[in-house]
Image 1 (cartoon, protein in one colour):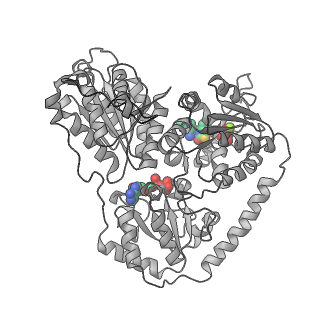
Image 2 (cartoon, helix red, strand yellow):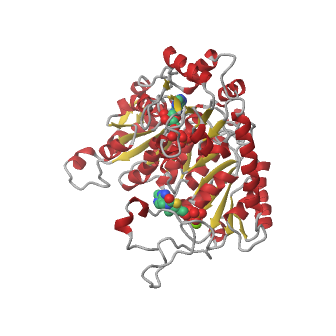
Image 3 (cartoon, protein in one colour):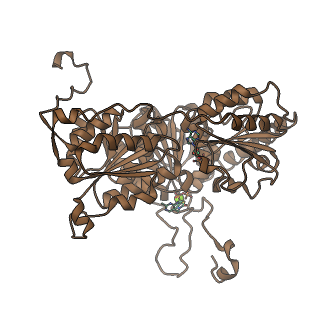
Length: 580
Ligand code: ADP
Ligand code: TZD
Ligand code: MG
């Protein structure tokens, strides 16, 4: 392409392939063939040149300061786009750093592919002390959905297609693709390489449920007196918001979102039972789980749940059924096909008790009034606490519903989730199934890059510490990300007491006087240090509107936040001598 017909602002056309190509060229071309347009990673031997080639061929390369965060970005990219995010790592520790995110993606059903360079095989297998030698494939295997190694350039296109299929089809997850250094560097004739590429057919096939399963589920739903729908992040991922809206509109069934499913249907809609979780658990006779697992986040189906509740479970993974409680009506299939089939079979009338939804609505009204009172109580007290800060943030987020919210911490997570309503699907990303810290900056970058939307990351001060250095990645890539740090000086709070009575800080204590805004200054972000709700409103409003990197250090009191994490209840007798 000549300079004259290159569109303004577009990257120049990639050069034609030379007569001979390397494994790296083939890998990049294979990734492009399946539609990969972005790669997150951190380079070094043996993948530096690979990243340059990818960039030169039109794959955006987003370089990070730590592989875990690059992996969190890839996972978030996969979740938000329904195509696998790609993480590129170097061998040994780079691989291991990235693998934490790939394992987390697998647990959360996010599609991603970690591609890692690895050293020469023979001296690894014979433990002969080669450069960054580690048996990466076998380490990855138990932690990912699938793992492959590619040793010859001829096999690269097949390996990429298989990795892609494994990441995205059925239950999505993390896939590991090990590419040896000799394979990356091997040379082939271009004409021979050309013959290797193919476009895979039906790369993410629909998986419709059986008609019997649909019939069983519909008859249970139609006969329910006090039904409820629990929406999980599998539904957010599957993009079934329109089908679920149709379902609740037609049946009048109230819904309850899991954390990352907030906004699939609006949190503030008339059928939202968000504030009535306990009542649903205790009183619902039929519960429909749509892309939500009956795992610890739902008390594994025990605890408050009525033993009589019958479950309809819509999930793509047959092994998910019956994991904690017998499921009366499993519907195994992809959510689009399953909901389509259920909607087609729904009768005109259901048996819903006419007092059920009004009862939940009355409870919602009462609880919401109490909640607002809590947010506004002591609004002028100094220093701020989590609730006063969130009371300031709530209207700003409500005025910017299309901003993606990233959220991690303990009190910062729970309180933010309870306070900030989500109106749009796939706009909340958090610590999720493993409740991990250290997803913040990576997820914020991944969300901004994958969608082009603005992001607000509300972070506990401890949580931010896990990924803080990758705020520099937000800045280098000039992303529209605002990081809000709730600084209460600690894990849970900053008032922990050192049990030894020495001058060492308590295990939970961090730095309540740390000025995180100065960290933002180091990378050229717009920064704010705020001590009052009104200053927080002004800072957040300005930061979001700027569509540029910003960091707000929110000064809380060290006593703000409840401590958790004690397990004494499991064995009170053995632990009775430990008093806190
Ligand atoms: P949450 O934490 O929001 O409850 P989970 O991650 O526990 O959500 O559950 C998500 C579920 O969604 C998983 O069991 C997964 O198998 C399922 N899932 C993912 N994608 C699809 C899909 N396209 N169709 C049906 N189920 C899906
Ligand atoms: N390490 C990892 C990887 N994940 C974890 N969940 C933890 C440690 C333990 N942990 C929690 O479960 S929450 C939390 C830690 C360290 C941080 C809480 O402090 P915070 O939030 O400052 O982020 P609050 O607002 O002070 O509670
Ligand atoms: Mg804290």
